[in-house]
Amino acid sequence: MATLLFITFAVLLLLGMPVAFSIALSALTVLLAGGVKPLMVVQRMFTAQDSFSLIAVPFFILAGDLMSKGTVSKVLVEFAESLVGWIKGGLTIVAVLAGMFFAAISGSGAATTAAVGATLIPEMEKRGYRVDKSAALIASAGTIGVVIPPSVPMVLYAVIAEQSVSTMFRNGFVPGILMGLVLIVIALVEAKKLNYPMGTKLSGRTIAKTFVKAIWGILMPLIILGGIFSGYFTSSEAADIAVIYAIIIGFFVYRDLGPKKLYEIVKGSAKTSAVIMIIIACSGAFGWVLANWNIPETIANGVLSVSQNKYIIMFIIGVIILIAGIFMETSSAIILLTPVFLPLVKAMGVNLVHFGVVFTVGLAIGMITPPVAINLFVASSITKMPMMKIGKAIRPYLLGLVIAFFLVMYVPMFIPGLIVG
Image (cartoon, rainbow, N blue to C red; front, side, top):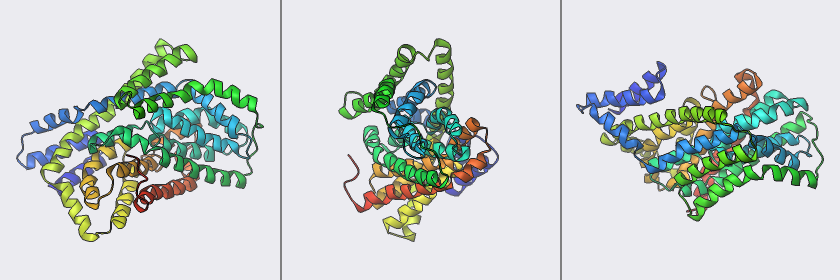
């Protein structure tokens, strides 16, 4: 049954079938072969979406779209430049810092890349920065968008693995900051090699002026995450508050949002949410098939028969996650692979929150590895540059992020207590 399930799924993907329908049809094939009524597919599709925590997904997507398509990204970039723009090649640091700032607002890698790229790439080109390198750096910084909370993939993992969303969020900050620091170091080395210019002089007045403009964007993650961690509201309620906050500052503070633009943003967010929700629904049937025929346990036993060393097994899982990120969209991979990995991770005694963070970071790297490299597609559309040219320029950043990924995996395993409960 496991062979039939995975071969059917792979064949349907190769034939160009959308991921959601490939998941559902492969599950249906196994059910029919096993003599189970097809009605089970419909029942499990409904059950898979019957979770209060999933309300957070469409609202965080909408909040991110509202903030990314307005003035917030511009004022955050200006504030970041006032802090570090005076350093040689300082705009590369600005790109990463702006990506980290926006990651704490959007929860989406593509939204982070689009918001920062549209604002910063034209300015970097004007000042003599190589466009392919600039686009590669901003696309790489966009991967932090799903690691620093709020994070849609973390919400999905928490629901499937039955973990606390707020605990997942608490443990996303350090890996996200680590990824940012790695990118900054590589960017500064590249800046020196390519002899990039210095930017604006350091000025307390400029910092204060840009901070006042950016304060509304900076306050958003503080309000949302502060409310979650203090227990004032749940992650689902936080997502709703994020949307209301984004609408208020869009209409009344920055005044870059009108009824027509709001309608278009809501429509686009609804499409994105619909794609994720139908994948979640179809994965319900897929997950039931996995559980009914004990497929995850069989895979776990097979892997454990190769080695009992949890460090070696985690390395194997890490490589699988990186490969999955190359070929699958982040949300799809989490929904599909989490039920497969969980029995193996539990058998090794690895903290499930830690594994969720590792899983998210590994799949985030897939956003810059073709063919399914959403951040590269976004950067390519902004620069009108072939994706493969940006892909060549991204190599040093990709290597740095892979190193950060294995640090996130192994450091908490060697130093217990790093995962915040």
